[in-house]
Length: 632
Image (cartoon, rainbow, N blue to C red):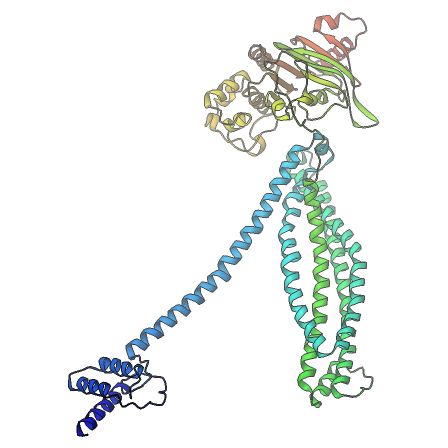
């Protein structure tokens, strides 16, 4: 008995030492009793040894789990362990908060911006791609400034449209659905009254939509015209200054700017008018619905009142059902205000959609020149080019080419001659399929060019336009523009054929010299020689030169034409020109009059035709040149 008591006391000592560890523990459950002598004996033996607190705690826990007398339910942490847990928790919380901030403030906005900007990028690229595919007829009928505004400004609306048409409606409808559900739960009759109020607001918005869209169109067209005016002014600045027309251009810009300002103001007035009407309807609805809520809250019909919010607030605080009244009051106001927000959102959306319609106008363009489904391979080498009974008109009632017939062979130079507007450039444009014939056909080696790939046709032709178009950058880049990857030797060889090497080599940087905006640092003759070199470097079987020597002096002209004749021995070369000195050296002359090729032959052959149209043209040009020399 004494031994048993000692052992039992020893067990109690173990329990006391276990629960006095300097740490928190969970509340202990009632300690079950046990008379298991073996457990008590083991506890006694443990106490008799030298044990630290951790060991004692482990023993006590083990004894409790085995059903002994000692059940401390201890899950203890010392000070260091608690500090480690606390620091770990704080660390994880800080990491989570920082991660959330980075994601919400950094990653999501960046990714959203990246997505929207890429959408705009691909839309603009698609617009440019489609513009490049349409015929020159479209570009002739359009203003450059309008195209710039559509690509740069109207396309930018897709960002706002996607946000306003997808993100905002979802957020608004979510809040509206919660408010509406609460109002329905509060009283279905009140919800029905709100629905009746929103119907006139919706009908009013629908009625205003056509007016908003018309104003939006006028606003965007006015801004497009303003952009066109800027483009025209900057493009003709030399002419403006030379003619002292600064005030004239300033007045024109001022007028266009005022039109854009008025259009913007009138569009905003339409939005403000619609918003005011909706707010008036919403305000009247709130007062009426407040009257109903007060009546239902008090529990008896309320007397008519015009005191509005003041009376409602006073009566609301006097009623016992204040919580229900305030909750319904807030939800009704939220529904009405959300309705106003939807109206305002709808108004803004109309302008965004108009902008997108103007942008997608380019995307929806159908090319006038369409490639066959299964085109033929380009014939090589090119031996003969022919126009066979070709007809063409820009407008149905104004034909430009009428039954043209012409044949040109490789190794010859054909001069296309005629009065201004006779169709010379149009005839050459059809060879490149910039326009398609309306009847007849243009053939290469007997193959209708409409049966060939458009890219092959243009890849095997080179052209130097009458308007010498250069780009900002180096001389070498401008010459090599027509042949990506051209070597410096190719560039220098082409410049030599065009006699452009003479002035290039006198410049400080040579072929690396910067040209300025559109070659503004060069004379007209120098720019013309660079455009000829750009056509020559392509080394294609067909070469078209539109007024190639109009800005050249007589000596340089003769040298350039001699070089071209030597260079083009195996090529079909066409010249569109009025210069008699250039015409005389051509192997064949085709004289156009009123869209018809009335005469063909060499210079001597055509001059021997009495009463011939070419003969009269030459005599007129000669008399005019002699008269000009006498005046000088």
